[in-house]
Each structure stands twice: as structure tokens, then as C-alpha cells.
Image (cartoon, rainbow, N blue to C red; front, side):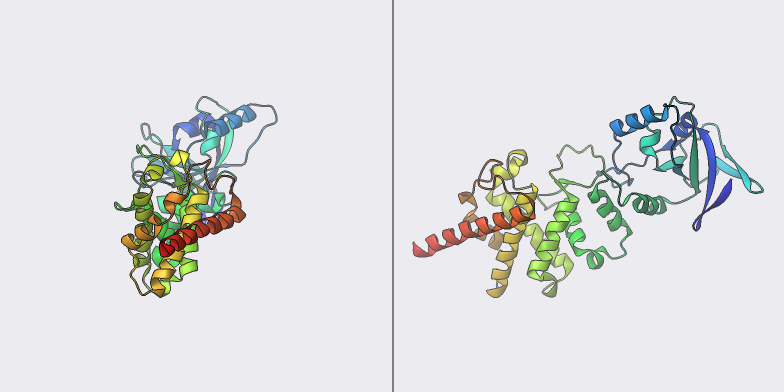
Length: 332
């Protein structure tokens, strides 16, 4: 049947699971190319649904699909009053994007079970992404980093609208950043580098830095972004062994990222008060005075710190170590 879902024309129909599977696909985000927008496929989730749907009395809400443009030579909708016929040409392949059903369909390639579906007509990938984000914004298990990545794609001026997200994405994309391609965006990647932190974590840390320093009153978002990048360059430079072994150290874990960002704020504010440009050398000089006095290993000085309370305690601990190091230098 033809109709509308709010303001969008759709088809409502029924088809066997194996037929829907044969002509549809999930557009999973490829972090290496930036193509796609969905979370990675969860085989266990899909297998659970397969076991369920084969039971007597099982059912499901309609699958949500989209017939991707262009339609020429691949698919057509033939009107018949209120009804319609969807014709997919032989050899057209997978013409329907699985907007909200990849885990329900993922393991049903061989099942003739009839399922209901709603299919949008010719949404662009961007429009699909908007629908996907609205449907799944509160979904359990959906990466907040993936939703943040979606927001970045929708923003007209990301630097102005979400400066903290602009900073986090720059750290992941910049050739000069030690975080380059190390942030998990919530998709798939074939890159050899292991993702060691999430985009959500980094943008929250960036938000803390922007708020604590009020840096955007001093400079543009782009200049502030370079300041944050220079700080992390200094961290990687002054703690090379710990940075090179993120699994065994806390530098790139939540407690390390949030606590070090607060220290970055301290150094920046001190430099501003001294009317000194805060570049990578200033950050490195400040860090080199005390970072080697802290055991950054997982079972080291910051072991047991967790949550927001843990971050606050870790910051106070690092500040105290830094204060003592500076006092020792001054006292000789």
C-alpha cells in the first residue's frame, strides 16, 4: 500500500525474510573512508532474533527500508489506486538500504517467514542518516560516538555549532595529531591502528577544556583546536613509552584523558596570565617538570580512580605532584 509516514511517502507491505534480505543491505560506517552511517553488525544480536522469529507466536514491528536512488533500470513502483506494486528488476541486486532492521534481517537469508516492512522511496543517504539517528538516538547499545559523528555531518558550521566536536574530529583526522585515526567513531575500520579512545570521550574532554579556559574569547575555534593538538603532541613527546603502549597505561583511557585535559587548562591559563603564547614547547616544558614522577601504568599512581569523582581526585593528585616538582625546582 502507498501512504505517508508523517511527511514522507512510503510503501507498506509484506514479503518473505529471504526476499527482503536478498534485495537489501546495511550501510555500515567505514571509518577509513567516511562512507556509511550505521553501527557495526552484531552477529549475536541477529542470531537471537532469528531464534525468536522461528518460534510459534513470534512477531515484529515493520522493518524500515529505503529504496536508494537512482531507480532507473533497477526498481519501479507501479500504482494501482491505494495499492502499489514494487518491481525489482532481475540482477538489480541490493537496492534497499536497511534503515532500521539490519540485525533483524542479518541472519534470515534462508527463512521464508513473512515479515511486514515500510519502505521509503528514494531518500538520499543523508536523509536516511537523519531517520536512522532519530529512530536510534536512545537505542541501547548504539554508540554515542556514532551519533556524534552523525551530528557532525548534519552541522552547517560545525566549528560554530559544536566546537568541542570540531576539536575532537580534528584530533582524529589531523596528520600532526598523535590521536590520528585512533578515535573510535562507532563504525568499522580496516586500519592497522587500534582505536584507543572514543570520539565521545574526546569531545567531552574538549568541552571541559573550552569551558575551563574560555579560550574561545581569546581566539577562533580553529586556533583553539591547534592549541589542544599541541598539548597532546607534548604529552606523546614527554611520555613516549607510555603513549606507545596504551593498553597498559592510563594516558588514553577516560581517567587519563579527562585528568590531563584539566592540566592542559591549568597550563594554558598560566601562560595567558604570563602573556606567553601557549605552544607545544610551552606544554612540553611544563609537562616535563613532573610527568615522570607519576606512574601512568594501569596499576600505577592513578589505579582505582573512576567516574567523575575519580577524575576530580586524579586531577588534584596530579596538581599536587606538579606543585611539589615546581617547589623543588625553585628551592634548588
